[in-house]
Image (tube, rainbow, N blue to C red):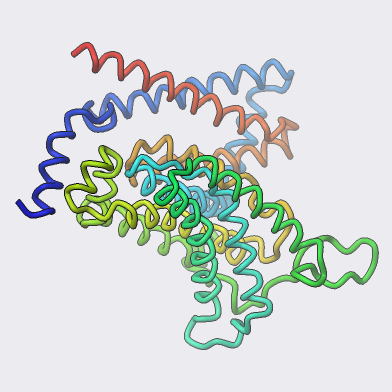
Length: 372
């Protein structure tokens, strides 16, 4: 029996031992996710009422900020792109039972590299669209390195990737702070005491081109790029030897290695891909929306993307559904704070309740499946 047939036999034997994500009907899983979201929304309404804010006014402000105009819809979807990229990377790594919690740092390092290339790498003078493509590629490469290092540590030394990706995230966030505080790095020249600690605005040619401009939704080229990468990721996980290796590594790495599958390179590759996606998310945020690097640049998107990946339960389609949910939540929450004086932190509370409710639902499904 050749190695490929051995790995197929291994996966077939282990298939029945997988979790509720693969054994239970999709409708039950979707029902649990929907129930978790509804429960969180009802809890949010209760909290708004307890704050003394008219619930109707708060909901109107939320709806106006999330989908009240073409621009609001576009802003919500653009925010969703970063969540979708981080979540897709999480799903790729999680296929091998690896958990990438370093999305925040990978976004930060991607933003740093994209800014440096846009401002000082000569990218603004490149032809054929390379002026905005090269910073995107540089950000993805930087994110891949930031994710690949924990992969090497995991594969070679058995280091827990949760710890290593998290610690590297702290390092990246402080690197970002250093870059925007030091004029020797990326901070704009100080002309007076009111000069903000941020970089110069990137050149126009390095900004992401707008698409569907007539719609008023302010979409940019990041939308089709994200969709294409998600489709490629789905194919990678389901139709390639690399995807098979990831799954085998997650089920039983020892047996998969004996079957001849490249488990070490699969582990490194999975975390590097997750990092690349998060680094690219940083580039999209910088080049498509913010245009200058700031200390709060990553804005918690990496941790929200982690929750998106958890909600998706291994499905790329689920990633987009959860990313859209979080994108509209964030846009609506920002407007709700400005108009109805409801703290935008309420959105974080809703996200936390969704996660906890989903975890409880997963345990309930696990117990029900074990009794069958």
